[in-house]
Length: 92
Image 1: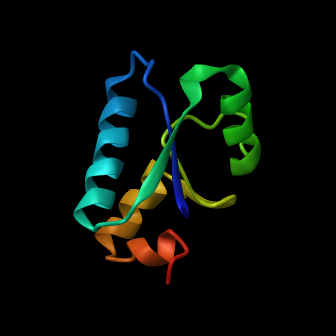
Image 2: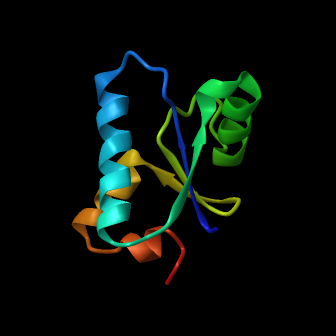
């Protein structure tokens, strides 16, 4: 599977929960299959996400195509507004 969404099931942040839900909703509305990777299962998964994103303080949601970094929520949201989700996800 290509698209990977790093997310967390353990957060007090309503903003993070809302952003994660919106990314999933949009991907599903476009029939784009994706794999969920929960960083709350252990610090090594979070560290892997941050390393791949090239940002030591990155927080979910972070979006990848395989191991290629696509971006964070803000970048995804911009791509949705510009109708360029497939390009953002490096599918086009």
